[in-house]
Image (cartoon, rainbow, N blue to C red; front, side, top):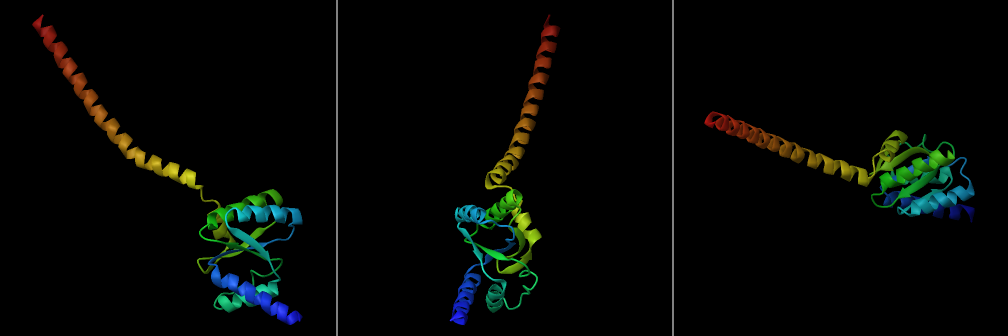
Length: 177
């Protein structure tokens, strides 16, 4: 009976690996039950979820899907997977980073991004990408900058022309008197 349960669990995890192109592996040592509930709620807000499964079962499942990759280092010590739904990898990475800063639990070990194994440093780089609002603001500033410079340049030419014409006018008035 135990073997059948393990086989079913491996198959369930294999389906997760097969159907998800973005997965983050974390070390969940030190994660308290009440913190896990809060963390899962935050993940749910970006359509991601946390699974804690025995390393041996995860290793069996992941080898069936990603046979060409070496996961031996990833599954050392307590390992959990965070399955990212859709394109919310950056938001999920930010949630993990912020949670780690507060509780020092859930340290990022590695990840599978677009079906490629990447190190923790790549996931952390994603977490440090500025938010959408900041990126849009910077984009608008970049678009606005050349236009502002053009307006100032054209305004400078117009101001110079007015000053020259005013100087000519004063000179003519002076000569007429």
